[in-house]
Length: 197
Image 1 (cartoon, one colour):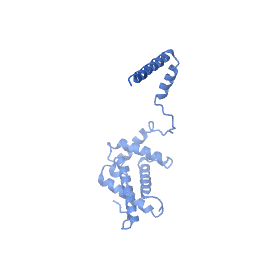
Image 2 (cartoon, rainbow, N blue to C red; image 1 turned 90 degrees about the vertical axis):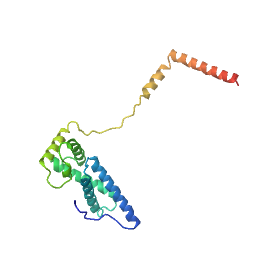
Image 3 (cartoon, rainbow, N blue to C red; image 1 turned 120 degrees about the vertical axis):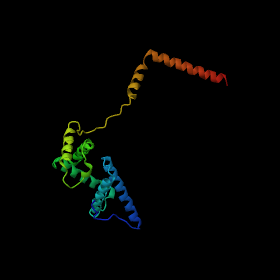
Image 4 (tube, rainbow, N blue to C red; image 1 turned 120 degrees about the horizontal axis):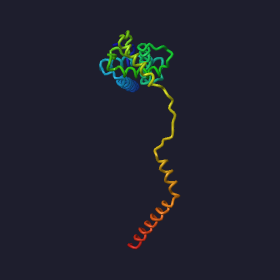
């Protein structure tokens, strides 16, 4: 496990307590992110989170206005994309967001077939079986996995069709007869009410 090059803020002052809470939140978010990728080895998960937080901690000096959660999330994304480029052999042509999405999909497709976790975000060379399985899954995902632009559309709950049919049927003689019967029934109830008072 890499040692942190810059210690996390500690101390007795109130601002240090706030900072410590923010780093705790950053820890929880990065841990949840890697858990969502099915990194289930707790020791590996803990070391990866500390590695990311250490790198985010190094960036605090150059980006003092950014919260630790934001720095940690960006650092995690940066390392993930770099690792996917290394494993999948992709050039810098593909945008980071697409590579990240397709790499995560490939990772989930091979999770039961190859032991990838011990090599996850490692800077050491990745074994051939892991890279081959990831690249195969990455290419197989291509026809089904396309990015599309979603545009908002009006929600149809079926009420519009019912309302249209009701309005159209109100002009028929059957509806007129129904209205006469309901009006008569209402008048009968009103007469009974007044007579029994």
